[in-house]
Image 1 (tube, rainbow, N blue to C red):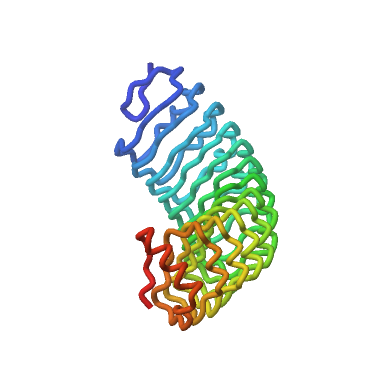
Image 2: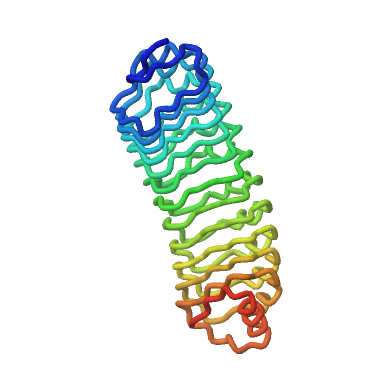
Length: 301
């Protein structure tokens, strides 16, 4: 038996929970727990990790949610068995290049940090299925990110992205893509290659139009484009027959394409904050009536 930050544990323990333990540091003798597979350090006040963290070679899950970390030791790259790493709600300004050594990672959560860029080495994490980067200060995406072809979830909301590179077309397994609250002025036509997408969030950008290729995303069930500057919708939006929620609040739309009438699965349609002139079109009226019958419409124009 040994003590880790006042907690008595067996040296062969596999799971250690120090959640909300009031920690300001992690004891250096953590390296004695060589059988550890799960370590939960969330909701503490850690400002750094000891280099000895790199000795936990069997670790598969590391949770550091809500701490005060400003950097990661390079030894983080020694945790080559990690599959899940949660670093959300810290104060990280950069990631060490050694992050690229964690080739077993499937989930990486970095929401609400202070990152301004990502190292290209992140492209080595080819097993990643979920990458969450929302609420940082990222201005552009590294070339390496397009190597992450197993991604199903990519969350980039509340950053400072001004463009989405054409290489997005390589992430063909994506089912959820969140680009809301950025500074995008357009989407590349290659967005249409993401044919597995079911959820696409584009609200609070500077978009004035959607490319016709948006109509190729035939698996979409949710499309949110609120608070942008859309002046029209492509008729191809009528191809999205699986849509259940289409949110277009606070744009500059004056007409709706009659092809919206094809969206027979819609249960929620947000149109308020626009100046729709063809709302009396019989096809549009039937669409609105159908949705109203499903009790979740907001079309106050």
